[in-house]
Picture 1: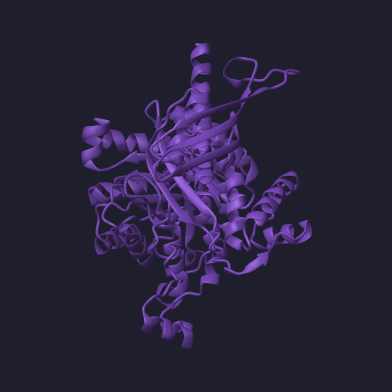
Picture 2: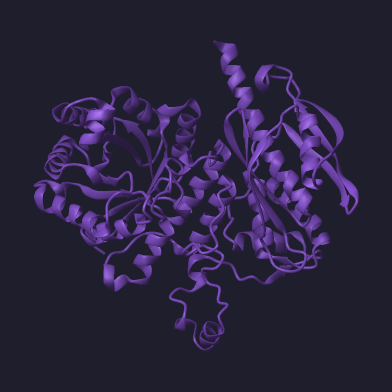
Length: 531
């Protein structure tokens, strides 16, 4: 297939996606997502905004070191310091990219940048030239291109290509444009910019009016050959264009679009589940492609049609996007070999031996509680283990009682892992101290009581801002998954827990949020101590 007939997928889940409130991920979680994106086959992974924080810099650097297939990009403003820091993070990648952005709409130029068009043009050219002196692959984004003057936008695009940009991104930063209008912009840029054949036209569409995917597809129809998107469409405000929706539109309608791509569609569902679990952002049930109802049929006429021929009401096969068959595969008498093989069959091929053993022990405990084990049960176990970050507090057990005419109470025992030096920094030869603490509390319900008992032990009191419970597997004894968000010191932290017991799942989710909050507080205290 000719290069111009292939659409490149630029995934910004780890940068724009993580900017969703409460969706921040730790380093371990970011690496999990990055590896899954690489397996998915995305062409470019935007790993973060390196200058924004030391943590983001380290995350981009580690992603750059680990990823071998996809290009790894870092975002930066059109300033030398930003660009240099970005390069210092991405330079370890097999295929590094520096992504420079600068606003081009009059509104942004006058109100945000407080500069003139001429000054912004000069800044853009200088930034690209400096970036090019460090890295051969430069992308330039004309922020708020959707509301930029067309003559000026074309002038900027031409200038940055001359300066060395290989990719020019035309973002609909605030989700303002309509599909026909946005497609026309791309066609006009192709027609009016004389050196446009030296660069790939990219688009980055936001979903404020629910048109991010429609605008991206319209851009492809008019010559764009890179789309910037996120898993599940997460991102700033109403989110970004959804990777899975664009991919499957191109896959289901190949004759209409007449373009190819490198995405391995059978990895889509796993990527969606992983990002949802790690960020705590639940996929709406009627979400296209990956929603729980995407392949569900309740109406009798639909059920009758599907039974006769799936094509009557389904334009995609669920297995094409990697939705596992919901069938019994393992039980409490199953051995390690069968369990490990099933994990690999589900696509988790890079789990360490020690982690596999830990998962097997959890599986045996679950198998004693459940009569049947489904693929979703196994996936939930894997992703719960994957999403756990630094454990300052470890749950030993929880016991709760409630009933009619009874005051709900809960008893919780937690191991507190105390490190002997400030802010959790362990020096050579020193051991981590731990203490087992038990507390009891009453509450409005068993979950509330358990949370209050945890607060007594940890000395922290997180305030729940969001809580949801759903079944993640089949059967009467299905695993329940709790996703929550909680605030602490004006920061939002997410947590996820799974168990056949609702109280236990709720406690696991809360503990995960508590550990994130405590870990962040220790880091902040350490920074203050160093000043």
